Length: 82
Image 1 (cartoon, rainbow, N blue to C red):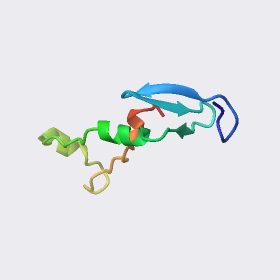
Image 2 (cartoon, one colour):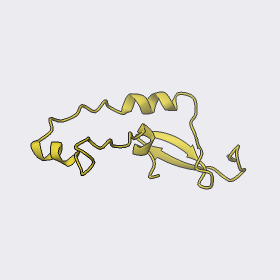
Image 3 (cartoon, helix red, strand yellow):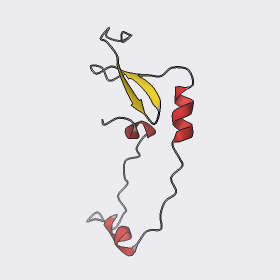
């Protein structure tokens, strides 16, 4: 199958039992009908573990004691190594 963006041949990767078509050049990702639902269903909601004292101190730096915010990751980061 050809990439609709740049015409290169799409590669197929299987993640969590779902085949995903992606373009290695433009990094576009295409899913067939129902594949997104399968990915969402199979990604279990992660509950945060209780933080230890060391974890709480790690979020503070030399910026006036304000906690640093970690960049929110997308569920696609589990599927692909971006």
